[in-house]
Length: 112
Length: 114
Image 1: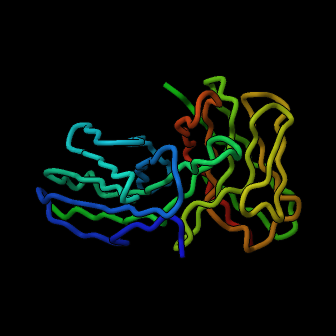
Image 2: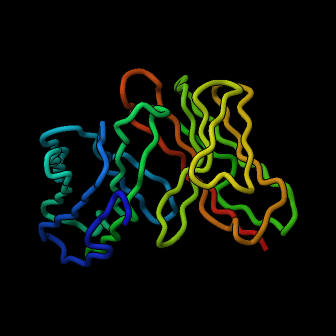
């Protein structure tokens, strides 16, 4: 079983729809990342959070440490939001600092 | 703004060639990482470095080596490229203060080994 599971794997939405991507993990963590990867490869960090909720523009990320679950929400989705969204967790142990475990990503396609 | 750059966006090499992938960061980060990304497998850590001349193996180091002679530069070396090393390679860097620090990624190098 993967230590970080994302759902769904693929998501197609109409422009304007509210979108939710889920991430569950099975290890103790110090932080969780939501990353965005556009076609062409470059990865951009959207959020890093260890508790509660963060909001940036139309994007909202929440985390429930007890449930080991995080969600990424996109309000009023737009075709430019089409990308792969990746959840990554930083393990909470005394090993080398900064190692991330990645989910396999959710490919989002927003149709006009 | 943190900037992580990689030497090539696309690279085509032949089986058996020695391949160098270069990564440079301009934020004085202590940690640097090399990942590969494959469809259905996500990103996997090859090697990382937490200081100059220091390195640690990640999850899939076989067939790779690394070099960090200067703090800003981290090189990934494929001693003898093979077709199963065709992949997207991503470099990242982060500070090493506190419990965890955000990683910043380069644009990626898509390597094809023929």
